[in-house]
Amino acid sequence: MRAGISVVLIFGLFVSAAQGAGQAEAKGKVETVTLYRGQALVTRVVSFEAAAGAVQLTVTNLPESVLPESLHASAGSGVEVRTVRYQARAQSEAPQAEVRKLDGQIHEVERTMRKNANEQQLVNKQESYLDGLRDFVAPTVKVEMTKGVLDADTLDELTSMIFDRRQGAAQRRLELDEEARDLREKLTLLNRQRSELTRTHAKTAREALVFLDKADAGKAKIRLHYLVSNATWEPRYNLRANAEMTKVSVEYAAVARQMTGEDWNDVKLTLSTAGAQMAAEGPRLALLRVTLGKSKTAYKNPQLEQQMKAQRKQLDVLNRTMQQTVERRAQIGLNWDINAAANRWQDNELIVDPKDIYVVKQPTAGTPVRLSANYELESAVSFASRRESQTIEIARLELPAEFYYQAVPLLTQYVFRYARLTNKGKLSLLEGRSNAYFDGDFVGTGTVPMMAQGQQVTVGFGMEPKLRAWREFVSKKDTDSRIGSRRTKLSYRLVLHNYSDKPFDLRLLDRTPVATDELEVEVSDTTEPLSEDPEYRRTRRRHGILRWDITVPGKAAARAPKILEYTYTLTYDKDLHIGGRQLTPNAANQPAADKVKREFFEGLRKGAF
Image 1 (cartoon, one colour):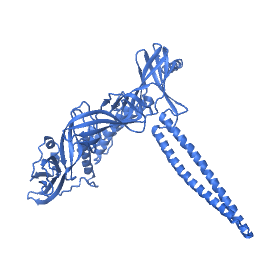
Image 2 (tube, rainbow, N blue to C red):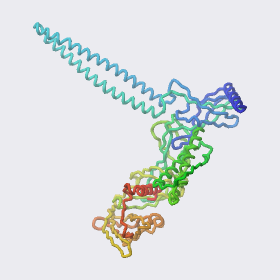
Image 3 (cartoon, one colour):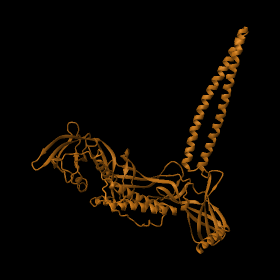
Image 4 (cartoon, rainbow, N blue to C red):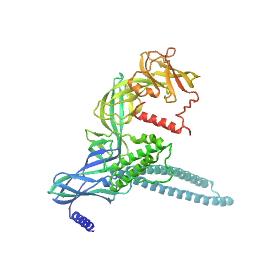
């Protein structure tokens, strides 16, 4: 009870002190911004003047996307920050300039729509009047015709007038209908643009109340920090290879977008791949309780590996979310969600059949940790709050490159250029989309894999138009041996055309089935030796990928192409048959097909292909 009374007394004293504090108001200027993926940490420098003692400083014009729980302030000597509180007040007009401009356009369109509706009513009245005039003239003409006093000239003028007026009214109605349709479309567009700029149409002033203690009277300043949503960025590259194929110029940029409701003018901008770290504590480990029963609960689940990988991914997502969550109650809830996900993970360990324990071991690595980096831009930038993206240059690098040509005739007849880049710069490069240029010409888009300092990656530079490649299936022969095995021999021919005068050195790729305990694979009768490249021998060769490093002479086309022939032999039990179809899923082999697909995409992401 005494503790509760103390809290009440302290709160009462705080309120009384705040009510008696000096008042100051300032907007401040955005000084620095750290732009994350989806959020940004903004720092404002707020200068103000007040007497010594307690001061309530109101920082005005906070953006609509501010996260109130993230507000905090710091100050230098002579000023002590007591607390920071957020408040929102209604006001007569929207605080954002671009929103106010759209509101004016919306009001003008609505006024024009009202004018259009009034004119349509007037046309309706004109048509009703002409209908009444027609109904009056027709009986009058009949009466005059029976009496023999019909004035034909007057009737002709009256009829012409009615038709002319009706035609004019119909034309005006058509014009008004078209105008009304255009106005409705314009109003819809303006409202959509406004909704993109702000989550609410309410005209609200957002402010931070900073309670301070000042040692001396006069000028002072503080820094107000807060998180905003609706801001993000992603890496983008321009890769430019010279005609001599000796180096690659890398233009490393960020495509950024912010719709926070606040313009950042002449700010020091930092681009970050990490998330805003708002939780000072890690998750706490809850108790694990299990129940015992008389029946055996061990089970064999064919989808267990996929389920555990999904659970590990969920754990990683929950952890990142907790670290980026500001509000304390939400952090506590996420703490429990993390423990619940871990419980489901550990349940699998407890009840899995011992024979299947290898499945449980496989997904323990979780989601690969992505490279976290901060890029501080040297020059100040201005970044308006708007729908359009803005490109910001991070760096320009000249990287040494090893170029080569690669042909995969099983997949395509075209031959492509590649460059092996070595990151000898001082920056780590993130994974991102790229535009590739060769000798000044645009050759296509691609992806630059994540590249730490000193690391090598491979990027593409488009098709080489002077080279073509084909694959021909030559023969197949099955034989059974006396010792219970079967041998299947398959022969192929790879044909390369060079339509230029100069020779080309290239990598030629094909494949065999992957060898297993039940299947032996042997390559023979190849007219060119397989590559001796150590990395290839260590990685892809043992998985059935065949690579030849060959030279295609000039004018090797039409009647004199470069031809490579080879054979491979499959040896397996004669009671077995080749099934294949791992890439074509069906009810029987869906798990195997999914595994092949996962391995392919994982290798593609790592640049293994």
